[in-house]
Amino acid sequence: MRSTIVPAQVTTVEDKITGRLGLSQLLLLTIPVFGGSALFVILPPFFSYALYKVVIIAGFAFLSGLLAIRIKGRILLSWAIAILRYNLRPRYYVFNKNSDYRREVLPKLKAEKPDQVETSKESVVIPRPQLSTAELVNIENILANPQSKLYFKTNKKGELRGYITEVQQ
Figure 1 (cartoon, rainbow, N blue to C red):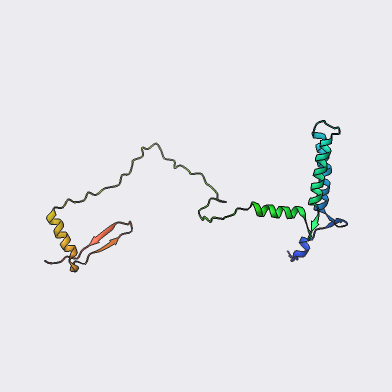
Figure 2 (figure 1 turned 30 degrees about the horizontal axis):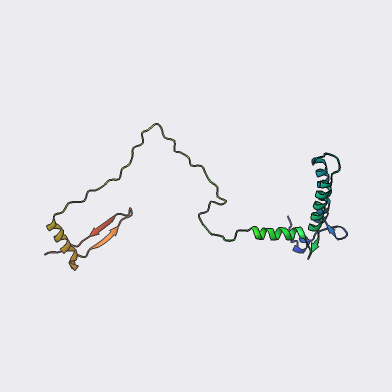
């Protein structure tokens, strides 16, 4: 299959239907005709003349005619949409990489287990040995000795272990 490159100028040109009027301008100028006839039928007194209907239809026609005016190659409606989008944008953007925007939220599935009573896992607490005052003083003297070479290591589970080199007294 062959593919060709189409220049951007060709894709952005709006076809002129009648004279200088484009499709969007013709649509803006014909909308008041169909919208006005719908308002003529819907608003009371139904299918009859009323002054307020004429004022509403004339205002609608004036507004759509005003939006169909072309300035710098663009109709006023497109300028109004651009300004409206700019004014309605958020003023500040706060980046959050943990945002749920455009993420698929999957429901949490419960694991199906046969009727078993769940046993609560309690953490094993190792009681600290109760040392006398004399033993505490002896340990502090060993730790203060630079030859004892006290150092700490953690294992893969995060448990902290302390190591002391035995020193002859």
